[in-house]
Length: 203
Image (cartoon, rainbow, N blue to C red; front, side, top):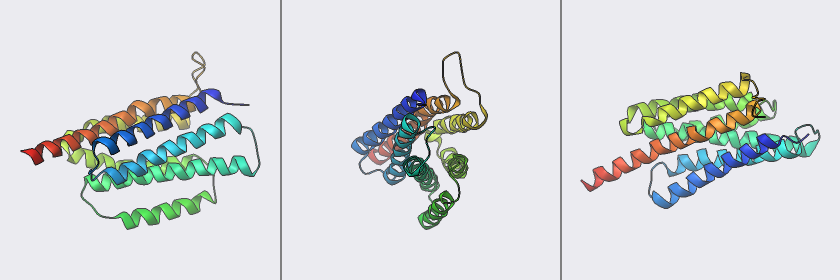
């Protein structure tokens, strides 16, 4: 049975992530946050679209193709989590990309053992913690803390929250809908920091 509401919300989330990535590349071409955002937003867009394909075509299916699409979506989610970690490290002025690469390799190995979406959530939470500390360190970017808290709430809803039968929305769809404003707040935090850096350079 096709899960249309989840597939559509996945597609919208992926489109938003790609739009923000393109916007950042066009308006902040020399940004020190370009690489972390490419990981974060690119991974999120790919994961959302792959997840949308799975929910549209394979939610009740078994076999190699559904398994491949689902695990590919989880891999993309892990890449997005690495983007959060890289963003946090950049905000904190810490160089540890080698460690992030090792953790990504461990995440990929874990995908061989499980296809539970909880793996992606558990990978994202500590990465978000780095970004949280980074936003707190940079006052112009503190609006991003609200976005991170919204992502945390969305993740809790995805794991334990109910469907909303009044609006025919599953808990996964609610998760995606909450991620959209959260992502905008995180992106706004980064762009506010970019603009404050530009102002400081001019002055």
